[in-house]
Image 1 (tube, rainbow, N blue to C red):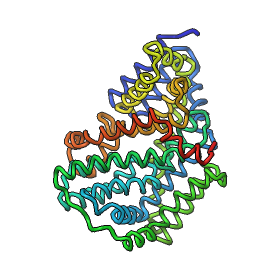
Image 2 (spheres, rainbow, N blue to C red; image 1 turned 45 degrees about the horizontal axis):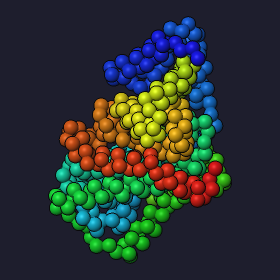
Image 3 (tube, rainbow, N blue to C red; image 1 turned 45 degrees about the vertical axis):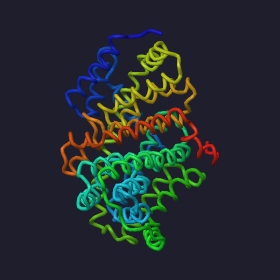
Image 4 (cartoon, one colour; image 1 turned 135 degrees about the horizontal axis):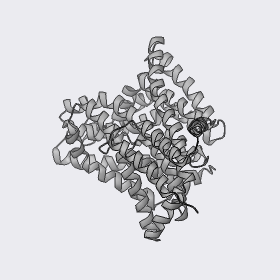
Length: 432
């Protein structure tokens, strides 16, 4: 295997330098790929060819549909109803509003699939409510941003579709099923952390649990929660492909938001679609440019070199798994989620499989690793959004988030070393 060390250095060093100079990630990926191709004397038409190839995928069409569904449902008055349902479930506990925040994120994550959307939508409502009831602003913001990562694991998540494509077309239905228990485990872990802090700081309880109130709120929220049922069970049951289910979900979300909840009118729908286009353009450009970067990595045999390097350090599967998590956590500090999935999957998935980690389990691992990265300076997008929404200095939010980082790391280790957590539902329901 011939290795062009200088070309690899041109690719990776130029990429890292541009990241440190705070270039937009799409520009950093595209320019470093261009420099690498120019050094090798390859035609620059290769860039266009692989950018088109990267987004020329039927399964990838599910991504814009899921993002559109999340934007419509998030703008259609769904947030308040899910918060009310969460309050009816867990508001009675010590630190009740923190618990409501976490459970509402689990519900909302199944609709938006985006940690940023969760933080912006629920945070703008819940952070002021928590502060008004006597919770510290930094604690309220920390709970909001960490619980938003549940939405990355709870289907339908467009990041799961991106990972399925990057991993060679594995089952989106299996990934959807695999996310439920890890998402719930993350929620429980954050609730335990919140309960301990709430006890120490004497945060208040909410109203007592009422089955009547819960029933009313569940019926009110039913139409929003039904969207998740349509998508997930449609895909798993073989009724729809992931792309078809996403298209059906968009139509359903429009009907619910406009005619049932009446949170959107025609003008509001157009404004929502405009914001969707902004998000979609960013995601699709990242996918296109990452395809070129991935081509450069593959032709330079970087995945093989990375595998040999890790195995050269140790052949202990436990240490290899920890190294994989560490690499992903470090990448999360400097890169956004989509490019990490697109670039790291072809490199690290074969290594993970060599130590017995299935592609489905690895998908859940990489998504949670990237979720933690969204909360980590210097590039943590959700950290910045939470800081802006909560009007709290970023340094103060990071300090308040430290106990929750520990909760998330514990869940990550459980997902890494206990495959049954991710694989129970796919194995039980026989999803291929």
